[in-house]
Length: 119
Image (tube, rainbow, N blue to C red; front, top):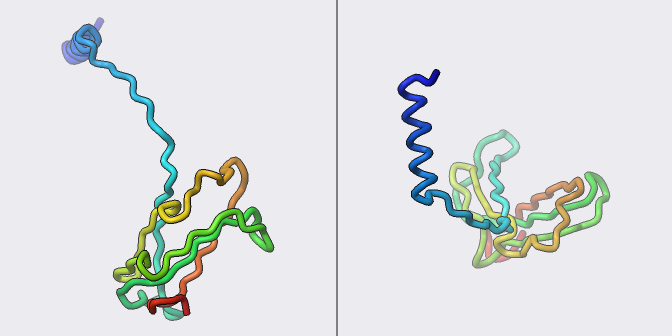
């Protein structure tokens, strides 16, 4: 026996189906991965706000792994850091479409200062 609320949901769903409420949409795989991090000094204090050069590298092993992919953010596409925090879409500069994600991967991040070129 259905109570009043369950009956209302069932009836609403039935009307939704009768009126053609479903449409199928195919979605494409996002080729970017949101990566967030924090930059601190040796005393665990946030670094100064600014634009920082960064390089992101995917390896196939934790130690002495082969480089699978790199993305460098310098000059006009440096990473904004505020209160030590940053966010970047990996793949927004160098495409990830050729990366095989059906394997263990390790991400390395290099920070190269805030000047025009890595320091």
